[in-house]
View 1 (tube, helix red, strand yellow):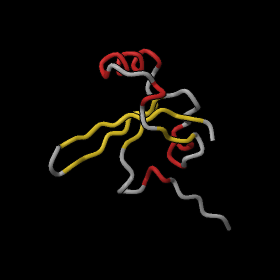
View 2 (cartoon, one colour):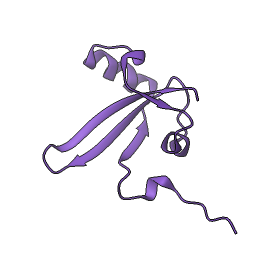
View 3 (cartoon, one colour):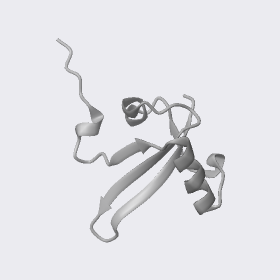
Length: 80
């Protein structure tokens, strides 16, 4: 019997979401950068696969922090 584990259900995995193209353009404009300059996440990453991220997408990661409150990071999805 194979038991499937949903990585998104783990308490240490922060919220990940794929940005809509219009949201991605706005984020890149606000940060003054291009997608290839963002940190990368591979499409084969378990979380990227779980949320359906495809190469070229931008993923928003929202973490709770005891010191900063909420921390937001962005990743550019690459093949692999």
